[in-house]
Image 1 (cartoon, one colour):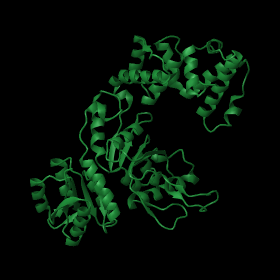
Image 2 (cartoon, one colour):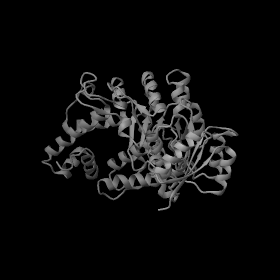
Image 3 (cartoon, helix red, strand yellow):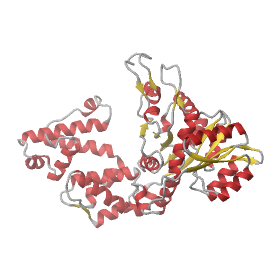
Image 4 (cartoon, helix red, strand yellow):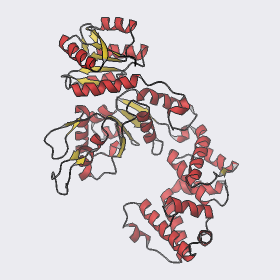
Amino acid sequence: MTAKRALIIDDEPDIRELLEITLGRMQIHTDSAASVASAKQLLMHNHYDLCLTDMRLPDGNGLELVELIQQQHPQLPVAVITAHGSIDTAIESMKAGAFDFISKPVDLPTLRKLVNTAIESSQLRPQPLHKVTPIIGESKAIHDLIRSIEKLARSQAPVYISGESGSGKELVAHSIHDLGPRASKPFIAVNCGAIPRELMESEFFGHKKGSFTGAHQDKTGLFQAAEGGTLFFDEVADLPLDMQVKLLRAIQEKSVRPVGAAEEIATDVRILCATHKNLEFEVNEGRFRQDLFYRLNVIQLAVAPLRERREDIALLTHHLLQKLASDIGLPPPQLSADAQKLLAHYHFPGNVRELENILERAFTLCESNLIDAQDLQLRDQENSTHSQEKTYSQKTTLRATGQTVDYPARCAEYSSLDEYLQDVEKEILCHALEQAKWNKTLAAKHLGITFRSLRYRLQKLGLDDE
């Protein structure tokens, strides 16, 4: 195995010696420079797998070297060494292309983790475009997005992924993780709007047994669960202000304190975040802390809505129908010319997620293996997907049982409309099957749906073996 080589740039002899000894014990050869000029000479004549540079140098600053390396040696990860608390300097360097940063006094375990991750990053090789990510599309917007993902995967800088609901922000975050040096470690996604406020601190940072009523045992927080990997905060704009303060400290200090613990625990996670809201607007309105926004928005990556890349609709439709059919072992249906035309001109306010819902409904309800324009039900879709699902479930209930149900009262028993609708649908299907003595063909006829539709619904609700 070829020995790795690192370039250390610092004008303090003690720091240089500490870094040389630490990297030497990791079987990494080192060259040292005390100035920008000497560092440029070494970069010109040698190949390196890693560069560590101080920000303050006698004849310039580390930012100049970061920009130079980004231009001339884009595959070389460079980490900057900053004074303790100089988070603004660290952010500026990562915006310029730095891989990561470490603060003085240098914490050796943190340094070793950074070096290992950087070495893995330098060994990543470009892959053919179609193998890079599961993101589907041939539009310029998608090609540009994938190239950005490839570049960002090599960095450890926080990334703020902006885009409308349903545009695929979590898929982008997962792709950044999968293509980077942390791919073998956990990727943990958390929806910040789905965690009850009183449980947030415990969920994020963990807690110790007995730290509060109900804490019967130690709990590992999300930061610790994602150790060495990536932590993705979805809908980060929904965080309450008091939790934003604690999250900011955890990110800046790279450590967390579990509820009830006496000491902080060092963490090594990459932070990615997303929201469909305009974070800058939220900052201006006082609902999101400016310092946290500044910390999370080191690099911003925008995901285009589906209506701005209409050339991808046909490809996405084919992929989604193939997936829906394979899930239940049926041949994929075809789209009529009218259905294709209707989809091509639809606005898609819900983006790819809405396209998937439209196709799933059409696939379930169409009478043959050909999805026609009316099967898409786009006019109703523009009004409200949930309203349509509720209406359909109500009509089916009446047809299957001949009874009227007090929907508002029953719905109040559930945490969400989706959960309620699933439960109602299960009751309908089970009742119809019992009436038909578990003859699925007869049950489908009684319900007024196709056998394929019944089979799909049973599989989706986990009733196919019952």
